[in-house]
Amino acid sequence: MARALTAPTGWALGAIGFHRPELEHSTRNAASCRVAAKRGYLLEGTKRSAAVHDDGRHDMHLHAPT
Image 1 (cartoon, rainbow, N blue to C red):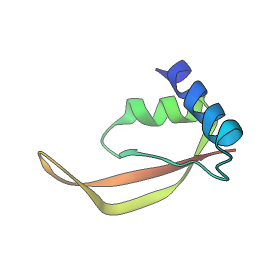
Image 2 (cartoon, rainbow, N blue to C red):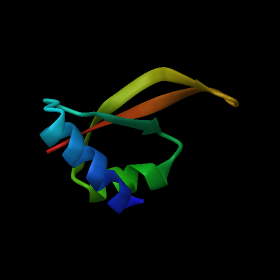
Image 3 (cartoon, rainbow, N blue to C red):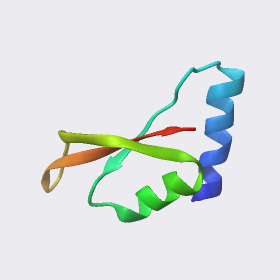
């Protein structure tokens, strides 16, 4: 999964010219946190109750590439 994040990040930064792509995932999803870190997305903070999933509200981690 970590390799799958490389292409869209390069596309967003290069071809599209995004200044700062962001990645969010539930704080309950440790695997997503590891994938983000492996691809150079730093954890910048936690957004409290930012998403509603089938099992209720979730806090979300916010990551951005270095």
